Image (tube, rainbow, N blue to C red; front, side):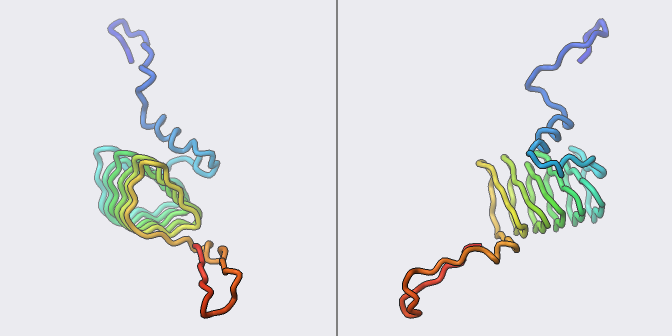
Length: 162
């Protein structure tokens, strides 16, 4: 901030810039989310169509259509997305309605809302996230199969956790 004498004043500790929020969003301990953002839909912007990129895409505005990237999709807390999404990784604090297919993982951070399906080997959700939909974890098909000690087909039940 600048005062009338053109000297710099320090900003309040509570104030954050979109870049600081992006840094906090990406400070997840995942080095792969440290990629440079190459496509951006800012707050107050609306986009309808298809986004295809190689790298990291950040959405803070409104998006309707499809998003395809072999990198990371970052969804800011003000974002409203109605789309089919395919990505290596999705990290969201915003609102998504549609289907997500991620080859690596999906992270939903509060106050995110998700209404649709998630197909990813790993899904994590913070407390405070609203999720309505289905999940499929393709690599989990090799997961644990539990069988009771009794192997009599009439009395045994098999449970497979995905």
